[in-house]
Length: 129
Image 1 (cartoon, one colour):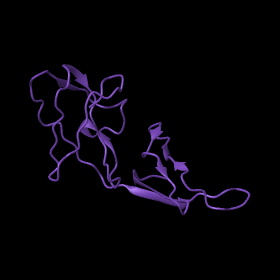
Image 2 (image 1 turned 135 degrees about the horizontal axis):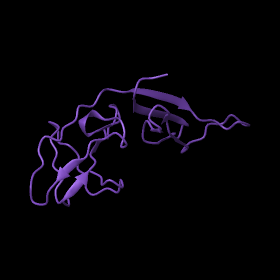
Image 3 (image 1 turned 180 degrees about the vertical axis):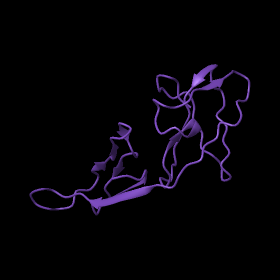
């Protein structure tokens, strides 16, 4: 969960069946985002929204459960490649690669770093050109 200013106020990972509880949240309106730590599904905001700007707020009250804040994540695509020096053509390891989605004006994936062989794999990307 995140506040309207996008400062995290709590986070938890879902268990094997997909259930989660984020305890000790303050009373107020919160934005809730769902991110696949395994990186194979497209991130989503509560109520199927693609970004924070369009996300629905969730009302939270101290000491009370706010049930049924659920999400369905769609499988994503991936981009792979190799990062090389423009002069020597040697592979460059530990270079971070980010994928930008201009349709929603935000990053489409978390940054991923090239490995020791200079190869990167960025997954959980939405379909598009």
